[in-house]
Image 1 (tube, rainbow, N blue to C red):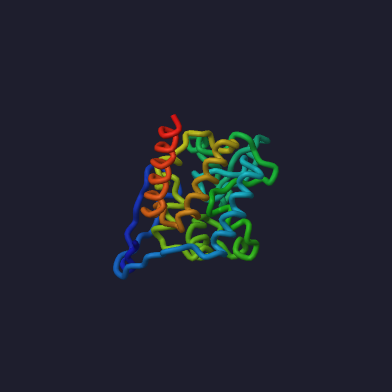
Image 2 (cartoon, one colour):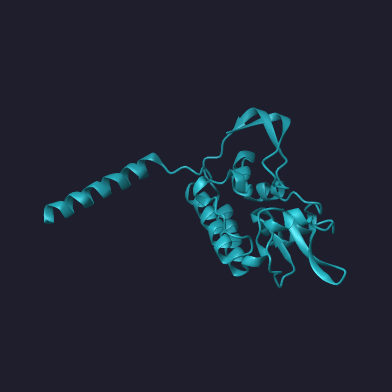
Length: 205
């Protein structure tokens, strides 16, 4: 549930991408994801798994540059990433020369969108538009601090484990139609199935 109207600024931890606009006023709630949105998210997942070193969740987008003949990570506007922030980026430079978050991958996979997206950064709004998400949904998908607890992995960015965890998070978002909540009826069905299975094993003994 999101409210439209007056904009407020919200900061989430030390995430450089964490300043977002929230809205107040008219309520908007998305009950399901479109087929196209699910297809796009699955393409993003494949892209992330294909080259884990090109995936990170600290910045919207970073690229490889050189300073004093040494490879370094640069922001979209070619500003060097600070040493303090480098711990959240892949240690191995990917062959493609760039690394991006979920929203960044989505924009880069759409050439027409990439050409018109803002150079300095926040791809989330464009990715939100592409997927047809409510602002509250895009925040839960694109900001790692807002992911469900079970996906708060401590894996190192740029590794296969880090990428696989992100794909599991995307799959959960798809499976729950962007709500991050399992349907109560499905959960009750699973519990009943589990009880019947235990009862059957006891009876066979």
